[in-house]
Length: 450
Image (cartoon, rainbow, N blue to C red; front, side, top):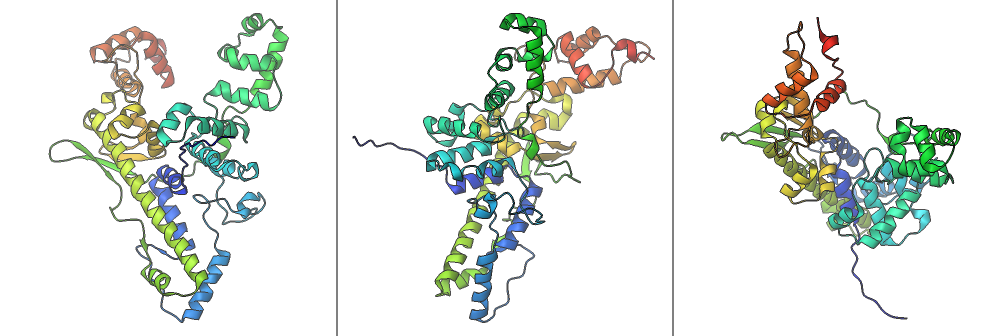
């Protein structure tokens, strides 16, 4: 036996709360705060009047009733016993909407994991994209969160063992491989997913059969198994498209010097303030149950105010980085978009790339040219043609502009379109022109002739 001393960092509930609020759009945050005000007597919205003073015994009775009936918002707090029961909210109009994060979190208590591993699994669950993939490498996530790499790798193993099968995969091949492993398929299907997935998509059964030393019939049987798998395990938890309008999260406008400056929507005031009456009661009451109840609600409200302020600061820094790097777009339009990666914004803001990904998810920017998703401004080079390569979004916009202005009696071929784009400062290959034209559903020159 020997004693060893080690340092580990666990994500606190406050850190997990910061991650979740960061991913909320302005409308989602507003709806959350409204719901919170119904559950927490310390939370008072700007247009909410304070409670009328009444006898102490009546108020104590009311607080005890609240304590017994309060459905704590487990979106940011420990999962309750009711939440662990999938039938607890059946038929309830007031039940929380199911999300992939909640679905994963409810599978953890029965596993009785060490606290640091449990916390790391929740962190990884918060980093999943809408498809259920974990795109960032464990080393990057460890560096960004302060969690040790061994703990994070153990948490990743746990995450990939949970439902839905395939969750936490880094790419499509790994996602399908995890699902095949779950159902005990270790034959040709597993080998195809590992090494020949692209060939399978193109229908090259003969080549796959030759490479694996199996018959084409076996390859076709494996293909049927693979097609029954779920390529996007997180898709079942995506919200239906029912947004009636877009509430911009950020506004970008030029200042008096001509620099484009980002500002968050709404006012700089917090979304709610703490109820003075209940804060006074907390300081004065001698009832231990009332004190415990109000102290917990006060801490919850303070934590959320802190998370909202952190969200606002991170979102504003990311938006300002976008405004600085894409100033050409705000001045001249889509054809001036330049290639930009999340890593570029992360470096400018001094934050981790995964934080940028969460900050821009579901957010939108309003400027003089309209409302755009923040993800719109992250674009890859159209061609790997060196430092002057244009962004793919800008290249498509320029291509559309050239085709719209061409002579309908003598439409331009892909080669002539390539030359025109190069003359406009957007050098791309003829193959890239054809690819973008097809993506925009624009026919070739012969079909455009009038």
